Length: 130
Ligand code: HEC
Ligand code: HEC
Ligand code: HEC
Ligand code: HEC
Image (cartoon, rainbow, N blue to C red; front, side):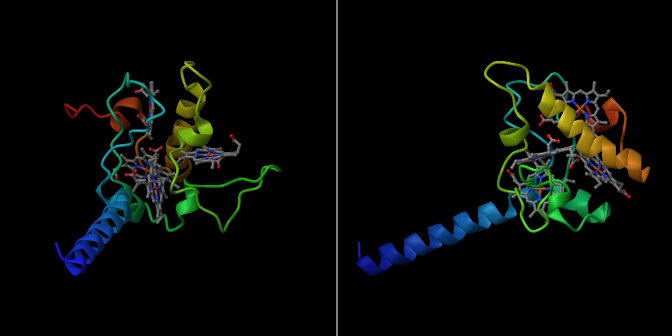
């Protein structure tokens, strides 16, 4: 193969990969954190971009936050490239109760505060046959 066509193919590859990464959250329909080895409940419905648009959330760090050691949230830093379990996980084989708690605090907490969005188990963990 020509060096030039190899270069072009490589470029196409890079562009495709960048596209996949950039649009991953757009295609998200459920929260499925890999910190849970298995799920007891159906995966919670969460159409990432559509949800945030409807809820009027403009700032990614409402959910993808970074805190410093003193416990202050950094307003100019995002952890959108990390799963929640990377910071709210569990040691070893322990069931990640802290992770469940943090998810519920984040999702349900805001729904309760704003009196909008689901707050009962079955309205988030919807049975869809997934
Ligand atoms: C209401 C909460 C919330 C807001 C606001 C939010 N996200 Fe997310 N996002 C999530 C959750 C939950 C996940 C899944 C995390 C996990 O698996 O642990 C996620 C995942 C992601 C992922 C990974 C996608 C994938 O498929 O793996 C990216 C990238 C991302 N968000 C970017 C953003 C950006 C950029 C913004 C701001 C424009 C944003 N998010 C705002 C909750 C939110
Ligand atoms: C880079 C590490 C990191 C990531 C990633 C992260 N957090 Fe946190 N989070 C923290 C730290 C540190 C605190 C402060 C100490 C605490 O409350 O555990 C915190 C606090 C919280 C709190 C309590 C205070 C608040 O701001 O509401 C909730 C709820 C929470 N995180 C949920 C989440 C969710 C949901 C995700 C994924 C969308 C997430 N966190 C991703 C580090 C992280
Ligand atoms: C900062 C506030 C906030 C956070 C955090 C948040 N939500 Fe919401 N959510 C809302 C609001 C507001 C609505 C109602 C939007 C409307 O008017 O339809 C909503 C609606 C929903 C709905 C109803 C369908 C829809 O997409 O409108 C689902 C399902 C939902 N949220 C799931 C979640 C999950 C799962 C999380 C955590 C990963 C989460 N939400 C975190 C504010 C929030
Ligand atoms: C506002 C939405 C919301 C509500 C309401 C809610 N959850 Fe969750 N829950 C979540 C999210 C998001 C996760 C993280 C799921 C994942 O990543 O797999 C989760 C995780 C869990 C998990 C750990 C994962 C699994 O399936 O084993 C359990 C257990 C759970 N929830 C039970 C409940 C119960 C019981 C209730 C009612 C008392 C409830 N949840 C209400 C959003 C919600």
